[in-house]
Image 1: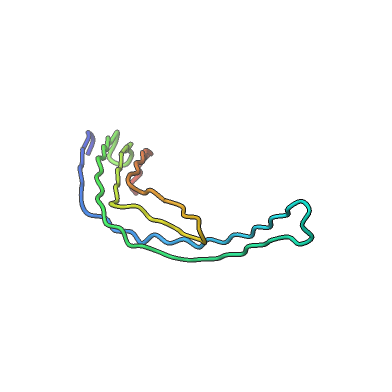
Image 2: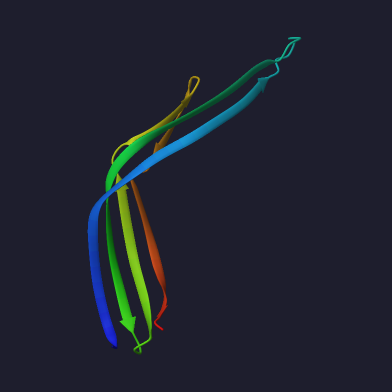
Length: 107
């Protein structure tokens, strides 16, 4: 089999995103005999729903050897917030994409 082939795909995606955050902070103030310290640690997680889409191209040079290339895109709804004390980090996982290519060999 020589020649090419294109394939497309799409569907739903799910991910469980989790973080563990640890902070050590020491504040030394002038004219104060004692340092003020803060130690905090928090773990949390959230499930997100989204989508994925992909497009792939294969081109076979011989029966056993060919090339492939593809692109993938994912997207998730919502943001994920990690809070520690009065500070909040907003993690945005709204979209991502990737590219792949290589050589295929059959035995």
